[in-house]
Structures are given as structure tokens and as C-alpha cells.
Length: 187
Image: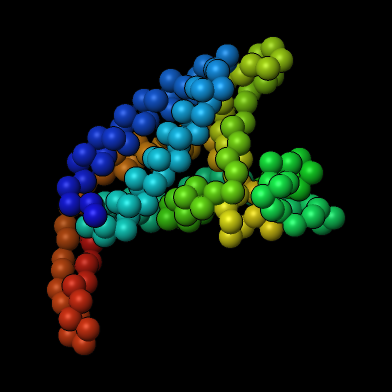
């Protein structure tokens, strides 16, 4: 699907600019927040497609670890489903986040398979109903019964910038003798 990576990276670069602009608006409209959500989601989808292409980003970039925080589901909380998935404060321990590092591919999958994606605001600096977006809370269809993730906007931007700036220096390919499938080895 990804023949040339430069235009995928160009689109990702545009999303970075959009995320920087929208996340920094203390009085963002519902439409702006929706566009921010779409930009973040799309950025991780583009990143996942570049990873899956196998020949578009370096091993170093593909295997980077993403800084996040995780917290578990409350022990007495009901099963997370389509009707209650937005009641995060009732379902998850939002005061129990612990620092974690997870693979870029896993983060991409969490976003692509997200059940919800909530913007987290810096409300201490602003009046009620306002604040810049400092990160996201989300979980995936695979993790929804056990955990929630908190990823800072700055970390999302760091990841996207690393993908945009990446170049694959060396690539070795040969056919598997048994399956005859082309195998890729990146430097």
C-alpha cells in the first residue's frame, strides 16, 4: 500500500502542525477538539502503515519505546461496553497512573483499535471549561477490561516528528529458501 513514504510523511508533518495549533488553544471549540482527535488518530494510523510497509522507516524508529502512563480498571467496575465506555472516572483508577514505556507498534494499535479517546486538559492554568490539551486518555478494544493509558501531547509529537525525520539508511532483502517470500532486514 505504501509505495513512496515521503508523501505519507508529508501528511504526518501537516498533522503535527495541526496538533500543535489545536492542542494549544485554551478555548478550543468542540469542532477543534474533534479535529485534534482525528489528527492524532490519523497520525498513528499513518505511522502504523509505515511500520507495516517494512521498508519505509528504520529499525531504530520502529522499535522506539513510547513514554506513557497506565492505570487499571477499578475492581468493582462493570464490564466496559458501548453504553458505559465514556464513564472513565467510574471504570478506571484515574489517580493510580504509573509510568510505563510501550512499543510504538502497540501504541499505534491502541489508537487504531481505541474504544474511546479523551483529551486531557491543563485546567489549573485556565478558568472553568477552558485549558490547553496536554494529552489523551484512551484504551483499546483489547485492553478495555483491564487498563487505560495516558499519553502526553508532547510525547505524541515527539513520536510523529521521529517518524517524519527518519530515513532508512540500509536495507537488505532476500527470498526465504523454503517459502520463497521476500524477507527484509533493516539496518
